[in-house]
Length: 315
Ligand code: AKB
Image (cartoon, rainbow, N blue to C red; front, side):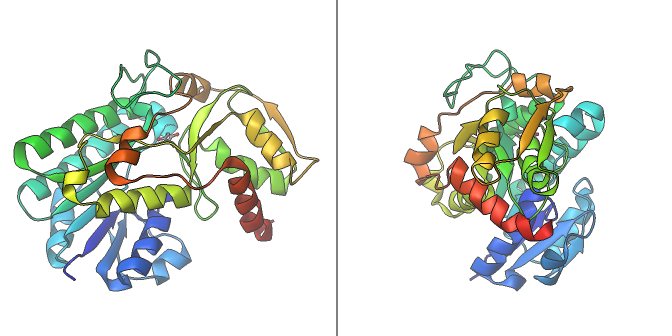
């Protein structure tokens, strides 16, 4: 099999689990992990690793050629909360890294790209419930603007140059293996750690802030499914809506209290409240279901059980 995969941003929340998953599926030497820094022990031991700055075109090209890469998963990005603090850094990282891989594919140096988009492409004027695939998109964050712009460029490179780029609008992602960093949905991971460690949590969003969320196993499954789908089935070349569950801090608290009755939450909303308020509460993902067979498998209570069971040994 000719496929050889490069994961850029392999040490982040999604990249870590994606790398291990793809190595189990395709063989460890077929999947090159790369990041600007080394990752956790399990990742570093699982197969080949390269230090790589996603903003450095020459370095990305050199690794692509040396390892005869066919498929690139570009997971390096600055998320919503951090990008509000460092707007130009966020814009430059999120856009330049995308142009590098799009141009490598345009020049036929790679065959296929996965690039993650986000529910952050939507903004305050978007319908909030069952947000359609195509609707008003006026993102109000740096991260959202970069993701929406990225979607336009992906579609443009597909239409103009035939670049095989595939993308998903991830909701907030929850996992026990690697911590997220700099996102607005990160509370939904932190809350499990604090529930086990301190039996209480101070939330930076208010009790009623409902957001679309997803367990990491579902996200990895969706990512690999869209990349492995036949090209004709991937009809949307900007990015697909994707949905699993929606909940607010009060609802996740109740789910945790089923396992840890003494757990308590209190609320101290900060600047991330405005970001969350600009995003949808639930997403219509019917096109992903029809086009390439997407189906979510894990509910809130199932996820809570898995999270607490796996994090328990840490505390
Ligand atoms: C964030 O909160 O910034 C991310 C996202 C929804 O894309 N998790």
